[in-house]
Image (cartoon, rainbow, N blue to C red; front, side, top):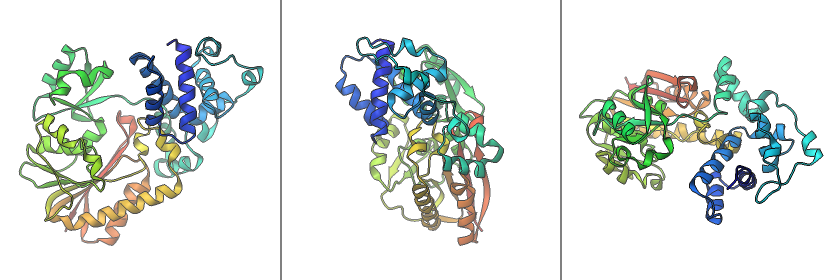
Length: 383
């Protein structure tokens, strides 16, 4: 495919997303119907789509419309590329621009320029104060790729050397001692021997830092209560050098966890109804995902005030539910990939008001300025 044809494909996919299709579904549907597209074509189109999703409002402003075509025009203007090299009308390319299109568009301002819905920007200002604009700006750009070195099978130096032998250049990151930032070759990572044999796992550096912050020690009985795909479950197992129980309200989210655990050499037991008491329970609760919108940019356009209220209700309910699963003197760990106070500090304050016998041992935010996603973690103990 020509570069112009790739942009045309991206415009079509963006129209599907605007009509309500999830981005991954729209991309997969297009790929199935377009067998002529090679792997480099699919990768380039995917990049175009996600770059525009991160800048959904500003590209529409610059392009003078909310169609995929207009947003492609806006993105080209945003990056300083020549629209006439893309809107050429040849083959599978987009048709040439009309005079009306050439005159359309305006520079975005305020929340529009920061690519946030107005109501979300208000929440950012309340939650982040003078860091709101910088956080919103960071979310407009691609996230770095990180791996976690699995200490059950390798050390950091060995994993880094093994990856380099297969053309994957990495660098340690100060936020977590197990983290390597992928500098070159990220798309080939899953094909490497280090990945296939469980030496490394894809995991954001701030997500790794959350697990680093937990008071884990060998011999502890631990539960990951909202395990999902199991990234933090496996990181906990590696630190414990022992078993971890994993639970999720939707067990289907854990469908890949047994294979991942086997590859990692970790002992993980999926439990439908956790029983007894634990030394530590981690609740990485469902949330807005606002700290990870670089990776899942649809989230900031799909989120509504009503959905956020629903999520904060779920978070409070989970905290209340797990309190009874922790032994006296044990630890309740609460985490989100959110930058919003209503999902973070306010949830801890609310829990303490309902359960005054608990106290905060630690709470910490990880900002996007530190290199990873935006995360919050707090640990509590029962007095």
